[in-house]
Image (cartoon, rainbow over all chains, first blue to last red; front, side, top):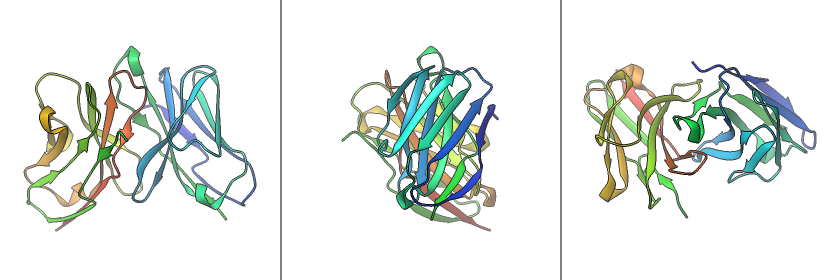
Length: 114
Length: 113
């Protein structure tokens, strides 16, 4: 398995509170991604990064922000959590256009907003 | 809108039956194609991939997929499924030059012993 660690693995939080999820990689891959997985929707891209401090929005970015201050770390922040953000969040990495484009996934974070 | 479609949402098979899961995409240019598998409670793992060349690609665990450019399809097949193949299967597409994969909604496969 690719060296990807997500933390925390499970979290329950209250509506309106900020939440930060962390993704750490040891593969030195350029691209990092945050997806959310919901029944019937597959995986949907939230944000991605193509280098330190270089990020872009995905198809479901509203309510989320990201930061990448180091190659190995990619943070996803829910500024004010809502019940619609209850989901399983997956981090992924890839070499992107500098290598093979397939993505490798972390173990996921199950977030429940009550 | 450009998308990836998996028409079979839930498939139930008996062991030893043959499997074919459909995947169609709507991107017009060159694409990279993938099938991922997610076993219960686990993360996504790559089953196989197609970048170019022979349109029939073989992956792990006896799976294969065929790219038919004229039909914008990349169907997954396995001649004889096992109970351990019970999982959710996702097709993904990465148009050349795009920076992220777009996933289909997934197909849940249940194999009965």
